[in-house]
Structure formats: structure tokens, C-alpha cells
Length: 218
Image (tube, rainbow, N blue to C red):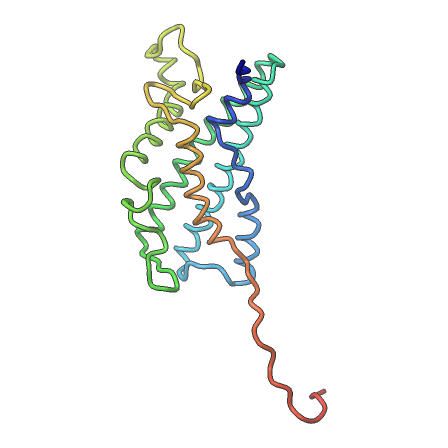
């Protein structure tokens, strides 16, 4: 007889963890700026990259915090505070993801290139998170979160509706727009890729100079 899966096991399947992603991006970016080893090669580009890295790190941390709270809620403690905190963190995740996408699109339009001459940020057809339909869904959910308070005050929301994003087992939704956790985590992984490249601090050790005869210079 097959044992029924627990709520946490079902959440593990529907909401991937992002623990494998680097979350020290801002600190590394700041260090690289101090050392003068980070691009892009223009002051405006550097400023956009700084903002982008900040928001990507925030998006990852908020997503992970929401997941941790959902696990606690579904683990049988029955504490609705954990569910409420999951709502808050997921709302922040959506807002930060939307803003990070705007920064990434701006970086793409700046036309920065990699060392091999290829675009640093690919065209939308080659990068899912920059496709128009994806950007529209993230923007619509973010707008629904931003406008919810005004809609409630103006009586545009039914009296039995929740006053925050709905957090389910498969995803999050509000005002008819839904994003699954699988989609959200995939898009976060995509934006993380570029934030990591913009934050790496690498020290390259080259070949030592050839030895010369005689004592070394003092």
C-alpha cells in the first residue's frame, strides 16, 4: 500500500529550494568595485549592475524565507503566523523579481558584450525570463499586490477575498494572475546567473617570472 505524501513532501515537489544559489552577491560586488575589477565598463552600466545584483540577492532571500515559513506551516504546527509571513515574503519576492527583470532588460539594451564578443545578456527569445509574456505576468502580479490596498478601500474586492496574495501548494496568485513556484524558481535561477557573473571576484595567478642569475634585487 502506497503511503500518502505529507503536505511538506508535496511542497518539496512543487516549490524547489534555491539553497544552491549564491546569496553573498552584494558583498562580493562591493568588494569587486573597491578593487576595480567589476564591469560593466561605463559608470552608468556599473550603477545599473549594482542595482540589479542587489535585487537579485533580495529576490532569492525572500523566496527562501517564504519557503521556510510554508514548510513550518505545513509541518503540522498549525501556526497561521507562519502562513502570514510566507505571504509577506512571497509578495516581496514578486516585487523584487519584477524590478530585477527591469534592470536586466536595461543591461541588455546597453549592449554589453562578453570576452568572446557575444551579448552579455541574450535576446529575449533565448532567455525565458525576458520574454514579453513572462514579464507581463510578473508585472501583473506585482501590480495586483501594489494596488490591492486601494482596491480594498475602493470596494473593488469582494468581501470574502483575502487581503494578501494567495499562497497555495503549487504557486501564488492574486486578481486572476498566477505564477507557479516552479516557474518562479526557474526565473530566479536565470536572473541569478547574470548577477553571479557581475559579482565574481577572481584572482588570476599567472606564471612566475623566469629565474635570473645572481642575487635578487634588494
